Image 1 (cartoon, rainbow, N blue to C red):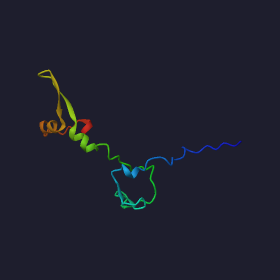
Image 2 (cartoon, rainbow, N blue to C red):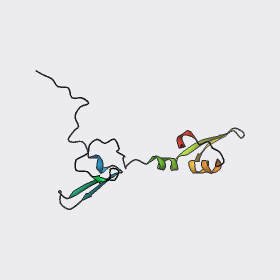
Image 3 (cartoon, helix red, strand yellow):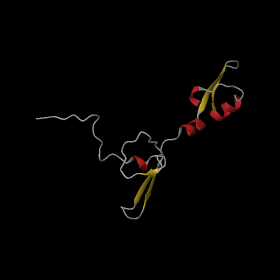
Image 4 (cartoon, helix red, strand yellow):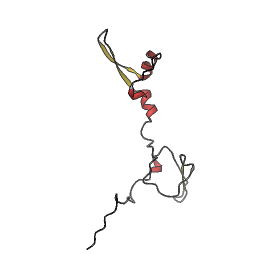
Length: 107
């Protein structure tokens, strides 16, 4: 008996189509099953195959980095008053607008 090893496995036919949940994917469907058009706004062209793996996939169900920065809180300490607390990123930027330093997570 001969065994064959497939490099990095094979893609599953049951894998979900990435364009349905990608921020760059536009899926238009008509009333009939055959009436469906998929367009990739990143590649700026229609997609004719069922994409199950893509190195430019951006999950639209997850917040963007910009959105996470906008809702982030910064842990701030005041050694003079021995006070520690959280401030919003927006408030932190307002308090430190004259400084060139930005916390590492906001760069």
